[in-house]
Length: 339
Image 1 (cartoon, rainbow, N blue to C red):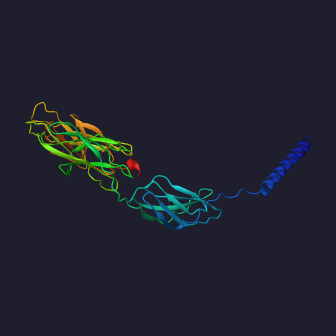
Image 2 (image 1 turned 180 degrees about the vertical axis):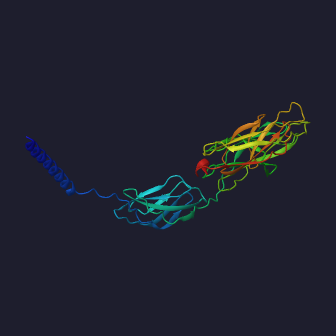
Image 3 (image 1 turned 135 degrees about the horizontal axis):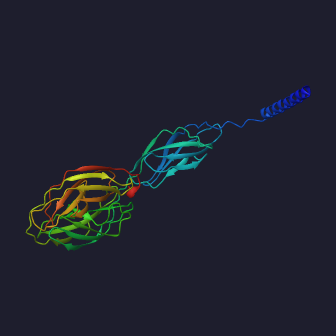
């Protein structure tokens, strides 16, 4: 009986081994799957500019090669969002929606079907065609409310092919930084009718006002019609004390207009009952006016350095010396606020 069992076990083991060997031989006979393609295309060469306008750049390059095949090319610039992609064998692309006088550095990258990326091409720097045409002149300038130190002006906006334009107010023929627009920073497109308060005027004094428009390239329009106004009388000649700017930082989300979070100490005024307003000045110009408060979240459309000071002004237009200055750096993708 033991001999019979041993024979049956030996036969079973031999059969199992035979099956395993047959399966192994069959597996070895099947073709192996191909290795994935990890070889990138060759570097595109000879990137060059073929056409330039005020708002676009067209570039071309020499084709890349690949062990399997080039699929597409992507034209890109480190300072701009997105890419312009074209299918191989096309070797030219146009980047649009640029601004006049804008300097840009482009590269192109080749991709194969497995999205293996080539080494980027050598860079090419190009400047779009400059804008030399001024905006249209603002019109219909009128005088509204007048106080001892302020005059409200309203006008029809100047227009330009390349918005947004900004407006500069002239007092007795001289541009002033003592004006604050009623249009919030970063508004684009600009409203067709705008207004602004001219501030820190002397009581009982006659002034002449005009407005001109300036486009993003710095071209200046002709001046609007001129208007005159006389401020009300006031016996107050004492200025408030200077505030201290306690903190200033970028509290936004890196989009234009960016937030400026500001806090300052309160000023005092020798004249009892004279309400104090605080001018928030960015790079010397009034950004907004805060009546009585000592903190605000202001908005700026200035890319880069924003040097902030606070000036206290009473109702007679007497202004304190500026506070200490603090600088806030803003950074957003090009194109924000039309920049």
